[in-house]
Length: 32
Image (cartoon, rainbow, N blue to C red):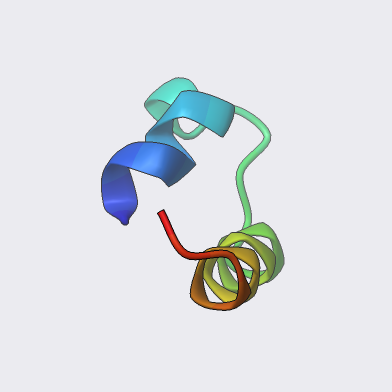
């Protein structure tokens, strides 16, 4: 799951815990 987040926020640029939780929730709802 971390790999998907890194694509949206490379090097942690403009990245926040809120964004992390949002992506985690989306990935949990949408199966790969």
